[in-house]
Image (cartoon, rainbow, N blue to C red; front, side, top):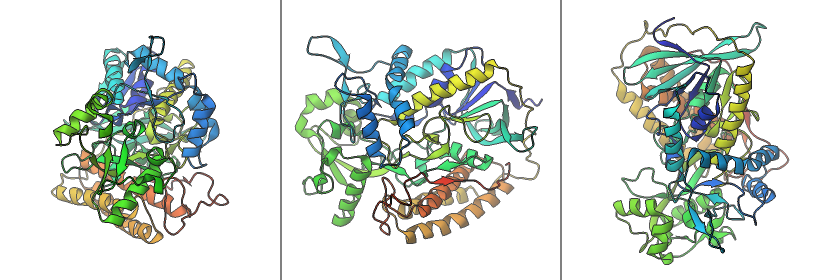
Length: 540
C-alpha cells in the first residue's frame, strides 16, 4: 500500500455539526478519519446565529412544530420525516447539553432558571433554544474540543475531497463506495483514504451565487461527488435566500439573524416605511421566502440598493443583551443598531435539496452516507423553516451513526485501496486566471438568471452558459494538476447545472422557486419532489 493511502473504518468529509456529532456518536473502537477543507471550525455551523428549533416549552407541542414545518415547506415536505426529526428534537438538545454547550437561560415566574426560547419566522411558538446570538459557535467549538480529545479520530485539516472511489459488488450490478481521493492543499499532494463507510457532511452550495451569507467553503463538494458517483439528488431548485444580510462592501457574508425580526424588528424602505404587511399578514414573521421576495420586489420597485432592518425602538440594553455579537460586529462596520436601522439585502443562505438519503442517512451507493445540508431528507420541502437545519443535522447524524455502528458490529470487509492518483499526463497550470474568471462568471449568471425571481428565458440563458462553462472546466481538469480553486469550481459548476435542470422541470411557483412564467401553485402536476438521476460520469 502506498504511503499516500490510509485505511479507516469510517471517513467523514466535513466538520460542521453533522460531521462532528456523527464522529462523536460512533464507537470509540472505530478508526475514524475526519477530513475538512480548512480548519476544523470552518463550517456553516460556526456562523449560525439564531439557534435550534425544538419543542421545550409546556405550551408548545410536537404537532404544532410539525404543522408549522409543513406549512413553511409549501406542501412539499415528507410528513413522516418531519415528525421523526421533530420528535427527536429534545433528545438532540439534551445531547448538546451533555457535550457542554451552554444555552442562554432566564428566570421563570417562580425564580428558577429555564432555557430562553426565541421565536422566528414561520413558528407559531417560541421554540428556538440558543446561546445568545452565537449558537453555532458555541456548538461547533464545544464539539470540536471533544473531537480533538478522542483518540480514535484522526483529523485531516486543509484537505479538499476530490472524488469518491467505487467498485462493483460481486453481483456485478450494484456498486459500493471504497474510499476517496483528497488534495492536501498544504503539501499539494493527492492522498487516498480507504474505508467501507464514507459520510458526506459537506454542507450546501450557496457559494454558487454572487451574494451569500455562507463562508467560502460552501461549494457543493459532497453533492457534486455523490452525483458523479451515481447518486440521485432532489429539490435542487429550492435555494433559500436569507432576507437580511448586512449591506456593506466589506461585510460580504454577514448575516443578521432572523431572531432580530422575531424579537420585534421592523423592515423599512429607504423612506422609513414598513412594507411587509402588503405581502403577508404575518408581516416580518412571514417565512423567509416571502420576506426575501418582498425585499427583492421593493428594491427593484424603488431602484434601491438595499432595504433596512430596525430594532432601535427596543433600546440599547435590550439589544446588547439579546444580540451582543451582532451589535458589536455591526458597530465595527459603522452602524449602531441601537440608534439606527441596519441596511440589508437578501443573499443565498441554504440549500434545501441535495443527495437523496433514507432515515439512516444511506444514499443510493452502498456504504455512502449523507448528513446535514448536503442531503435531501424531505424535512424542508419547498422552503426551510428557520432553525430546523441544525436540528436536522443532529437528528440524522445520530441516526446514521447508529446504523453504521450496527454494521461495524457485524463485521465489514476492508475494501482494497484505490489505484494511485495518476498525474503523469498533466502539468502545472499557467492560466490560473481562467479559474478566477470562470468562478466569477458562474456566480454572477446564477444570481442574475437563477435567483430569487426566475423566468424560462433566464433559465435557458443560464443553461447555455453552464454548458459552455462545463466544457471549459472539463478540459482544464483533464490537462492540469488539481488545485483547491479548480476542485471547487468544478463542483460549483456541477451543482449549478443541477439547480438549473431542476428549476426548468418545475413549471409552477412554490416556496423558494418563484417564476414569473408560472406564478401559481400546481398541485396536480408538481406536488412531489424534483428528482434527478445521474447519467454515466468518469471516475476522476
